[in-house]
Length: 183
Image 1 (cartoon, one colour):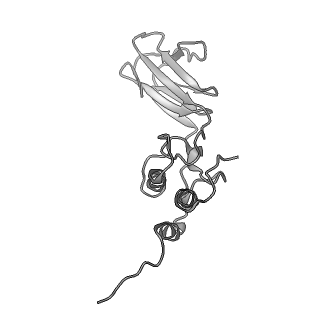
Image 2 (cartoon, rainbow, N blue to C red):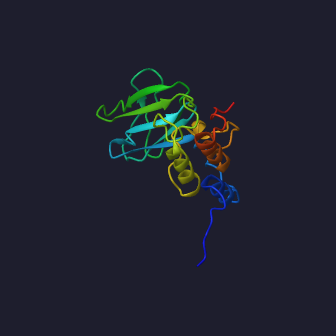
Image 3 (cartoon, one colour):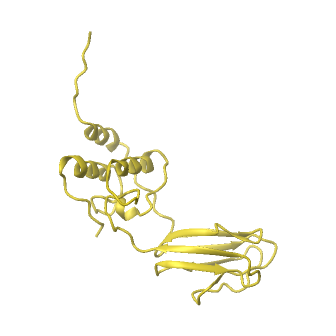
């Protein structure tokens, strides 16, 4: 009977098995689309990061506007097929409406530059093995991108990849260096 012996640890296997798959987290979209259709904004609730641009497209046969409830932006009247874009450079909640059809409302929430808890990949308030799992799922299994990409850059080098998974596991189980925010 053959006996198998442990040759290396799980983190070493993950690192060795995944280094050959040189994948990085897709770059966040700088522009996020909102559709105006059926007398509604879609999505009606949108969360973006500071510096991202929202582009509204009127897909209705009727004219609409996208108008901030506070004086941040006003698209003017958008006919069918017309677009309007606005870049959000200040964190906060931005309710808006169509000034022609006042029942059409929506909200955009702009997150500040994140990296409040480097290593907290899933942004749940703690750093644990679930963060490594979330990052692996995002990088290699088509899972959702980290809510705060900067927190997933565990080693702070500006790129998110398998080295960050290794650094996170090293921190959690091997007393490695603490995760850091990108410079």
